[in-house]
Image (tube, rainbow, N blue to C red; front, side):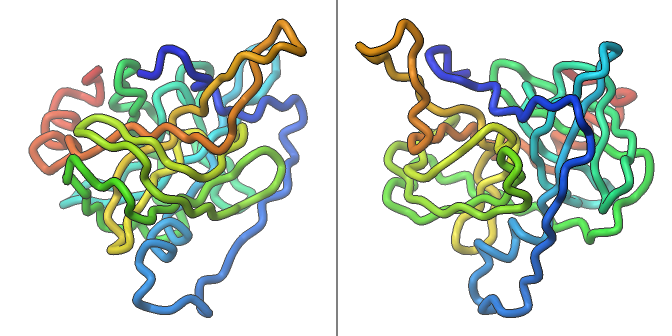
Length: 230
């Protein structure tokens, strides 16, 4: 977990009626698996609390073996009743795994989504510095958007992506050029400023939590113990 960063990249809204822009990938080159994987599997995740406020984040819809699930950031699903937007339909979801130290969570929806779940393949190479990666998510009120950047620092648990992230981007899964999942958007850097008592966001330094630990054995344990592994 990035202790000195802003990890709450959530869009906070009272009005739930936010326009979602859909993208077609028919014009994308078939070899560009990095873009296709993110575009096809990206979903918008929300939560509701008794006070009526809603928070928004992002995630991606995957399958592995017989299981279909959504990978997102843990802080996206820390509060309230979680749901996934499937078009204009709100589909209830359950948190089946949440690790606040890693800032990674897995949720499952009460019914299958209209989009096709993407087969999860992960990139577990510890050092991928210099590689181009990308994610698709729902930042702020911009609708479905894709961002590309390169890896400036990398290890087994996390990496730094030189790109861009706004509130609402949290939980978006980052992919490499072969369409393999690397991690989830977790935070952006905070930097002190002499002009204000409050630090400012450095939206171009994006911190990613790795998800190479999600494999068949891990999922088997998650789903065998009644959706309650934490």
